Amino acid sequence: MMLTDYVRIVVRRWWLVVLPLMPIALITWLTTPSAAPTTYVVTMTFAVGLPPEPLREQAYNYDRHYNWLASEYVTQGFALIVGKGAFAENVARRLAQQDIALRAPLAGAIRSEYRSSVLVIYVSWPDAEQAAQIAQAVVDELNENYEAYWPQLKGAGASPVRLMDPIVPVATPAPLRNQLDLPLRIALGLAVGIGLALLWHHYDPFIRERREIERLGFSIIAEIPQR
Image (tube, rainbow, N blue to C red; front, top):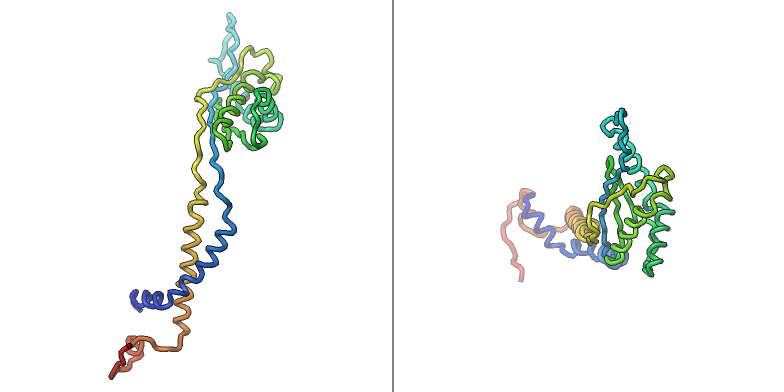
């Protein structure tokens, strides 16, 4: 069979092609949640480092190797506690002292990662203004209360973190799954419908076109036109 033959089969039984789209449209309407609120993300990069110890005469400082090594330990330590219970509670307490009422708990809104001596903290929140306020409270907590998390930092004399980025909330795009969900379902429904049309044709006992008789090896003497 030629491609045009398959097209004729599908067009002839177009209702079978469209039929699966109806339940798919209904299921999509019932299962698709309402439009998700826009999420704003603040990305903050911190340089982490301990103040170097004063140099002493006749003492070799190993090119500050131990300062860098300690800074990496501090970075890893803060990455482990940022966003966890105590840290999130202290950030929420700071916001409450500023009469900032959050719409939801902070659990899961703050996360972090690190690379060497660089700490990256992400704040995700459905409100842009509150996202910036939460991010600023995170910075203040790290700068003012760092000794409360690690006893090793007591007496350091200065905060071991330094913010390198401005606090700017950025709206995140809708997930790719939400954008492709409906087109993929429609494509699946069309594929099922075309399959049904071809299956129906395969088991159809009637001859509907003269070319079907010609394929059987018979000669057509006359043809009654449709009116």
